Image (cartoon, rainbow, N blue to C red; front, side, top):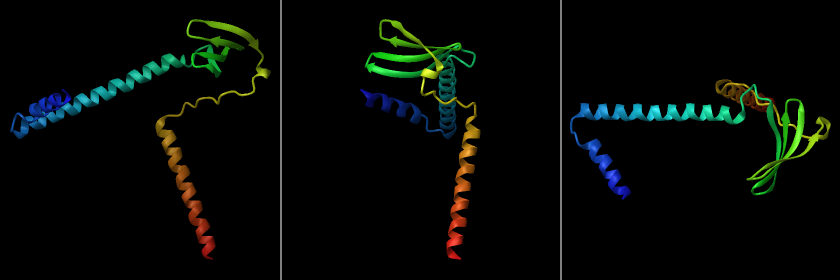
Length: 142
């Protein structure tokens, strides 16, 4: 069955022997592909913001511990208070309220850097490492 679909698509693309029509079809397919990629990018970005809760949320997950495949213990921060909750498929139960001093590990804050800035920092770091390697090898030659 999949072979029929592939052959139908190639027949459609190769049906016209004229070069101009083939170029137009190719441009149309490229535009369609770009639209699909753009739509998936913005959809992912939108869903990601909804799941995280945005910057102005009072809720923050601090840590999660899996007890069984469908049961978790979770430490959450709500406002300025911390709670340990049990999460199952059917319900969520409050275990206890915690003090900040009782919590040993806090996840690092997510940076608001743009992708371009992260790549630039990585390239600069790599260039710096290469320069130190070159200077070390020059010292060895002397």
